[in-house]
Image (tube, rainbow, N blue to C red; front, top):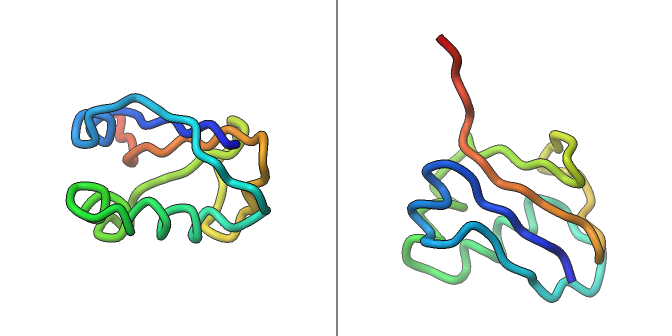
Length: 83
């Protein structure tokens, strides 16, 4: 299992702040995003149509190529700007 967390407007769009997902083997952040996008609807809009979506694996910013393993926590969030 992996723990998924959704933040900011992503959480609002998906209607949930997180979930546990059965994820038996290591895969990349990119593969995880593709799996979530395959749910269709708003999930597809947010995960395949959003090139600026950021990910953190175990509380560290992670590139699309980062591995996600069973037991990991993955957070997704839109880019943040300051001002």
